[in-house]
Image 1 (tube, rainbow, N blue to C red):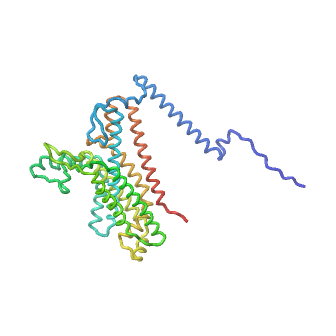
Image 2: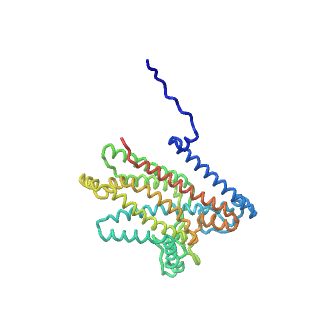
Length: 403
């Protein structure tokens, strides 16, 4: 009779941490983590010693001290008696403003140029090729300075509107001058909050309707006029509420008074130049991304859509772009991140972003270089992570769904 016994398990030996493949990867990771921790601790210790040698400490109390400088472009109340923290917040909002405007404009321009570059019209495709190659192969800083020079040198002075040498645009509501662009500013009255609530409800209704239309199309193939219905949902309820509430929102139009325009909303040349330069520069890269995404879709998809009777515009919107988005969105995220970080070049034209306030004047006045740079880096890191998270969520929502 044969007795079967379990094999005797070997005892653990330290040599297995190196020679046994089951433990080697863990050993390497542990050693690498220990080295990183040692390096970081050495850097922190060395920084503290150097600060002590210079008679400094590590403190963020300077954020509550009086700033003592003015900021020409601001979205919230601020004056020279405000704190450095308030000045940093103004700079952050200015950075977010130009980044948002730039991302939206660059996306629209990039999609438009990318689609037109594939046009069968030779002239149109060549013009888009000149735009793409011309803008993306010239440093962004040069475009910022060029647009700023155009705004300050080529635009008319305010006195030209008094003498009749220049005229306001859009039914005398917008003035483009060498001191900036003046546009109507909204003025809120009683009932404005209700009207804004109606607007938000309309936007929610549009989102719900578009989801319903997309689901109906997937299930039955029936295509609803989404554009016209969405426009009606947006306009009609708000128009009725606007007049029923007694016009709770009015416009303050810019008027020429003295040596400059008064009233309205003043967009400074530095903001306009930075916005346009970031948009057209990044839009050239986005155009190539869109073109590559469209070319990644098989031509058989287009031919099949034409065979079903779909028009070219609807084929592009319903067949080509939804498939191309899976290729377009990942590199598009990088372009949004680049645009946000490239906005730090605003200091070249005097636009007071967070780089100019917190990372510039505040550091020079307080001498808190380390704290200021850490806060500045933390802001850009947080902004980049938020943009990446939002775009990755959108990318996950459009990916192929397997049955």
